Amino acid sequence: MECNWDFIGLCLVEAGSSTSTIFGFSEFLTGLALLLIVYTITDFRYKFRISVSPVNLNKTIFFLITAIGIGTLITEFWVAQKWPTVTWNMSQAAWQSSFAIIFLSIVIIWLWYAFISPPKFSSKNYKKFSMQLYRVVLKGNIEEIKILSDELSLSIPNIVKLANNQEAVVQELKTDHVSYFANDMALLLANRRMCQCIADVSPNTALVLFDALSKEDVIHVDSFSTLTSNITAELIKNKNSQIYHEDHGYDSGLLGYIKPLSSSMFGNYKLLNMLGNRSVFDVDYKERDDWDSEQLNKYCDMVLLTFESYLKQGYWFAHSFILYRAISDIKSFCLGISEFNNTDLDWRNDAYKKFEVLISFAHELTTLLGKQDKTPHLIALKPKDENQKNLYDNIANFYAEIIHAAAYVRSPIDTCWTIQHNTVWGKLISRFAEDTEARRIILHKVRRIIYDEIKEFERFPNYKSTRYLGFCLNVLWINGYKTSRRDEGRALRKVVNNWFRSNYLKLVEDNPVLAESCLAGGITYNMEKKALVKSYRGGMGKGPVLDYFYL
Image (cartoon, rainbow, N blue to C red):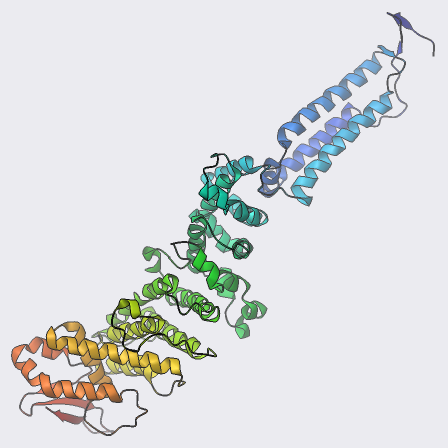
């Protein structure tokens, strides 16, 4: 090639242009414009993925695009001016092809991290990931949090594994260690808005979380207990959440039979027992107060799943703080039925529906115990102190609380009878229920609790004992007729019979107010005949029928 210039021994020639443009400056501007438009209209999910990639894609792409733009502009201008170049320099087509390859690589890398292989929380990007997640949660944009709550399902297994690092718990590692950041991520996910979005649109994240936790032999940190508790609260609060669509299979289809989310979250007692001092069922009392009967029923269903796992996994010999606190929280709804005292019963009233939920829950606890191949035999029927009490005592106390709550309703007669006899006695204690060893043990303990309350009245007169007496008097009536030994009220009837014969006349003289509180459901005291009088509705055209129990 003939030299046009000779510079310090270098042969320089005029820069020549290619016959066809491969990737010129105009093509670069077109591609850049398209890239910017795509990035602008891209969903927040993919922008988040780019921002948390292991390499700093935003800065890297910026500098590469700047270099490509300047390079294409310089090469075209150089060729257009026919400025000198060395003979061994690449042709314009080669330079344009190189820039095109770099530009295409930028697009491919962007697509790879945005769509093909999204970045996950790891030791390579944990600081960037944490900062971006913190900014989104702090900003509080619900739509962005909804997207992020679903996106995090990819990183949950890594967060769980890295946060649950025994070395970080036992030893004093540097505060910028990945395990500390992972633990902070678990606490950040416990934000109520984040948990609300998980319950609303991304139950898969909750499913992945509990599956990842179940793979850990021991949970070393408490951060997951806060997260799981808040997820439970939001799932129950949101009636459109997945757990409401995992009802009975006949109504809910396949998800109702397999219950993927419910079983994963509440069907593994071993996992729930490892989560820490805060139970998955520890929902704030202010939120529980706002629950309606449907939400309470769903909460009870979740507790029943855990109780079933508690029995099947063989934990029944040990005290369960999870179940004890959950049942105690459910007990707090009992007294809602007292609003029907001196009021006609409304079957559609939510307070009555809640009371029916409690009775159904207590019955299911007993049924699950009775279904065990080998009924747990736990200590004596009459525990001497709190240390000897067991799950039978816990359930029996729940029965007693329901009975005590129903005893608040004293009138009208129909309302009192419906709640005390038909709703409580008929469904909880009636002999028509399936007779199992577990049921016999629990009912024995229930009778013992009531008996102890009645005996307590002889030492210290109190209104709680009078309510138990009034309930038994109304439901069983004590006129001394012979009953079958299978009658669940036979033993209580004898106790109440003896108590009224021995104590009531003296109580009327000493404390007529307490004496009056022992009577409910239209039962009255006839001073002249010294008898208790129970009135029954007569036949058509007839007055009430009176039955006397002479003291």
